[in-house]
Amino acid sequence: MSKPKVWCGFHACNTLPPGELGVSLFIAVQEQRLLCHRETGEFLLLEQQLDSAGQPRHLLGVYNDSPCYAVDYSQFQPPVDLDWCALRSLLGVVDEELFNLGGRACQIVNWDRQHRFCGCCGAMTTRSDGECSRHCDRCNEFFYPRLSPCIIVVIRRGEHCLLASSSRWEGKFYSALAGFIEPGETVEEALHREVMEEVGIEVTNLSYFGSQPWPFPGQLMLGFHADYLAGDIQVDGEEIVAADWWHWRQLPPHPDEHTLSGRLIRQFVDSCSGKGDC
Image (cartoon, rainbow, N blue to C red):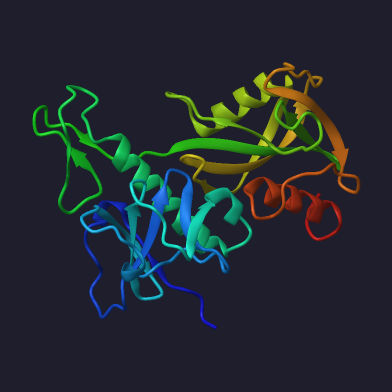
């Protein structure tokens, strides 16, 4: 079976690419939940399955040659054969491309709902033609969907890597270090700062690995490996309650490869087990 073809473009999200297209598909959103078939978990729905007449629809792109729209379904009761499904519960259940499409739907619908009034003057905004934005006619401000960029890093020290446990995991689950990039920072500066703030060490040899959209609620994760340089682990006991060096053969419970953290850890393990350079 050929891979689904996805076209998307936020700055042209009210227009479609040329060519023949199939029947329109819809993703119904309520905050961080999608309307799904109870038995299959399928969330790409046909218009006749939804009672959402008059609701704004947002073109997300083209999926398998069909236009795909997001619609805010917060004010409607789900049909009897459909139910709400948390977006996070679909991670690893549906393929990555489809999960990212569901995440895009949540972010666009929530952005549209949260920016119906201008943040500068309080006037009601309107949807723009030809691009994904809302416009204030009174003060001529435009409001676009925004992402919060974050770094996430696995730190290497020979055959060990540093993994940490947050306060909500209470030392029972470990992951890579992560944090938001602050205004005025480069990605590299943010990585050095976050590592120092969370575990009190210095790193070197930053190596970019890859990225992942993370719609909880609207991050873009930028993944790195880095090498230990100096310092002893010191956690603050609030955000991070535990951190340690773990041998690649004896890792604690950690994220799977559906997450960028899990992929970073897997790459480290592969490099130490002879599948790459440790």
